[in-house]
Length: 150
Image (cartoon, rainbow, N blue to C red; front, top):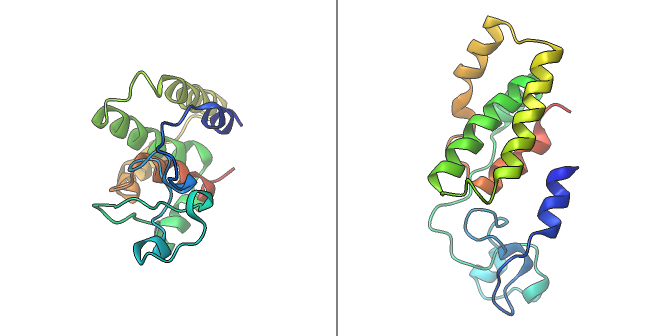
C-alpha cells in the first residue's frame, strides 16, 4: 500500500523522549494517552498514544456514520474522503508535502470512475453525506479509511 510506504519513510521531526503516538502532532498524531494526562504512563517514548495537549478532542466515527460509509461503493466513499482531504491540505497549507498522496487518491478515483461511472443518484448521496467527516483532522481522515469499502 503506497500510503503506508510513504508514511514509513517520512522523516518525523520529534523531540527526544516524546511518545511515538505524538509524532505528527496535532494533525497526524494518535488519540491522546489517558495515562499521560494523569501522569501515569509508564511506556514513555514507546507509547502508541499522543502525550501532547490537544485543544480540540479527537472525533470518532459514530456507528451510524460508519455504517453509511461501509455500505457505499468504494468510489463514493473515496469521493467524500478526497473532498475532505483536499480541504484539509489547503487549510493547513500542505499542498507540496502531500502532493504525492493527493495524486494517488486522484488517480484511484479516476480509475474507479472509468470502471463504473456513478449515477446521478449516487452523486447526490455523496453530496448528502459530505458532513460525515466534518471536524476530522488530517490524521483522522486516514484512520477512517479502515471502515470503508475495500
